[in-house]
Image (cartoon, rainbow, N blue to C red; front, top):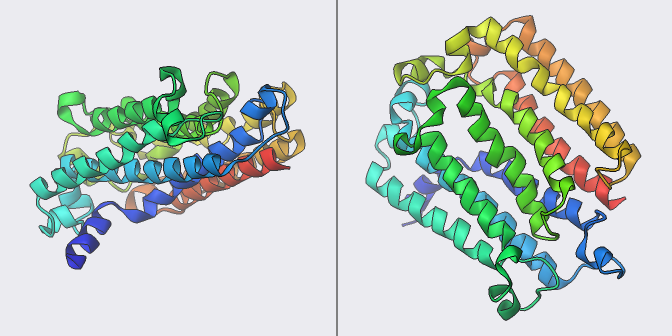
Length: 325
């Protein structure tokens, strides 16, 4: 059983589970430090109860499980791609059968989504209060359901398989993993019926609309065989590299704009510094990409892919800091 669990663990691609975990926690901290924190709106001192902490712990664990489920379902439908691009993955090698992977994904989806019914922000504190909260208070649950649907829209032919389309693929990655992730984290502490969480989510959405293509370049052979018309396949390596370049820089410029127009209620100076830092970092990454675009298609883990993940995690930590100080 331990050996089976180890294979299932590999199938979930554990390295990719950290960004959503961090993103949700960052979103929750951001909500707690915002002007929309429920104690603040009620005219009370900002508060942090044990129930709020447990709610965030539960919600962040569910976010990691949802990403794990998404990874498994993606590999089921990407088997043809992975035979060429990722020949060492468990489904390709036969270490896991498709039927077994299906049941694993079902279990992960159930464990990821159903518990979020209990993810209800203050003043609901007890289990009975959370279970019996008004429908509008279960915002996190509905965001998770929507995120789950997007994983099927991206991967499954029956739902459209947007992975096969250059532009729709990026959008259906960026909505759940960029925008909805931040809003879900926010909804664990405060109501998502405010502009602020969606503005923050839009920043991450715009970044991922372009940056999520960084892995498409090294996967071109397998994607072409599976008839997935990603950006580099549809437009060529050089042109696709130029198309995604602005998305590494422009979204972060929204941080100082949001800070100084009071859309963002965190520390203005920290948000401004974070926006400038990430924009400069993005410009450096763009330089790596455009200096030799063809290298993107030859190197499996091009530095730009690493920078994309590091930028995402830095942004998550930076937002949390900006709303704590």
